[in-house]
Length: 416
Image (cartoon, rainbow, N blue to C red):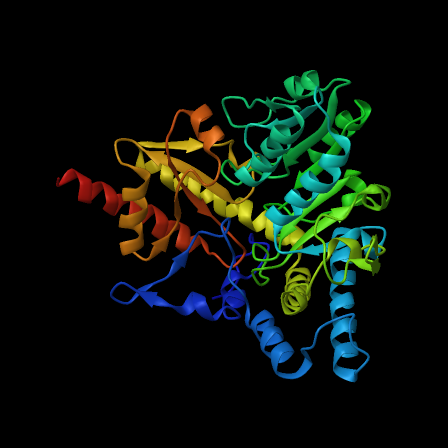
């Protein structure tokens, strides 16, 4: 199918790189995968990188002087350089490999947090945060006696920036916020929020799990202190994540995990931690997943992050149009021009799990539940919602199949 002149990219052509998208389910229905905020699919290029690594290049890194270990080490460090360039970090050793975004946030909470936060200090979050950017700070509060505060959102699901800034004060030690809400799709003004936090003397962590895969990221332009994201949400393997940290902060932080690789020397009396980034990569790191992440980055760059962002917003805009026409739909989050390719909604009188189950029988895969954001759902007055989340390999035709599935849902429930 030829690309329509108004579309930034050719999704039909790109889909051929993703074997799983050709899957047929439930009586030979095409799989319509709209759960990309949970995890994305992998192109053949990434899959082949993983196969090649295990077949031809695998050995432990940094520990051997034999040829295979040196080859593996070189590739692993090249992967770190790929990430550095992708997010425009200044130094390679500011890129720490972890097992995922959640692990990255916990690393900061345990290492930087335990060292710098005390009773009476405050941590400022937003009410739209994922549990992974709430619970580690609640655990820190339990350990230290600090106070957690939440910045509110308006009726459209956008952060109330004035109230966010009003909550900043001399006691605010840390601000932790999502660049993009995993439920609302809201795109937060990260750069200006960081600037406001820095004026108050606070350190800032950005949960970029929903932004890095979908739009260009420049951690230096943001002036971010910490940025966390996951490989599996950006075409890469599961089991690998990234913590970007400002050098001066990482240098002053104690190691979070102890063991092999993170030390300079060990005696019976104690240990001396290694240099960055080794001090935060104890044990055998995610070697092959890191190589797969390199391949994923190369693929995303070949498509173009700006094109991906524009295309996803077109899909979200079309979804809003079609679903609104169906009626009985409540959208959670702002209009498409203020958000990423995430469309969360409820259907009047029908539980979110029933919605997802009926859509699944039509071949349409969406997410149902609280999406690891229970405080946000309580704020919105709903127990659970449905979420259709798009990526560049989704099509306008698939958006129409989502709307058709909702029409079938209403027919099913009217007959009851």
